[in-house]
Length: 133
Image 1 (tube, rainbow, N blue to C red):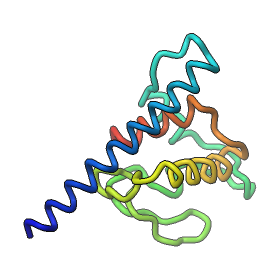
Image 2: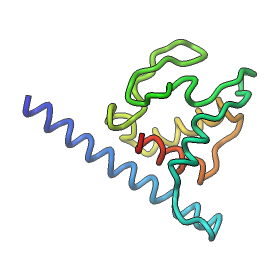
Image 3: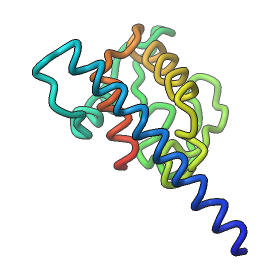
Image 4: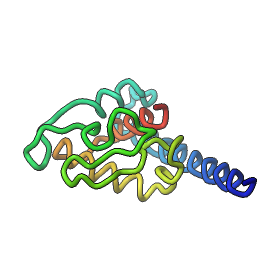
């Protein structure tokens, strides 16, 4: 049992440093794009995450359509009904463990919901919302 707890803690710490690294890089990009940028905002992230749009498949969707309102619980993909593991890194430390994977899923999910790639600020706001949920 101690080994499991130790591995969980190590994975959580590793995930937190990856998230911090990613958000730090995004903040630098955001500041370069907009000198008035100060910080990412979970409230803006929540608005992005919960707002509905006509997605790439012509249906009204939001991030909540697939990930649900409680990010600490599994959910189902709106289009495929495939189970999705919890999005919250508090419930699923594997979720934000690699920058490459974070970028891939943000790009894919923004395209699914918004029919475009998210801006630097939008990505940072959404990640800030998710990690604080």
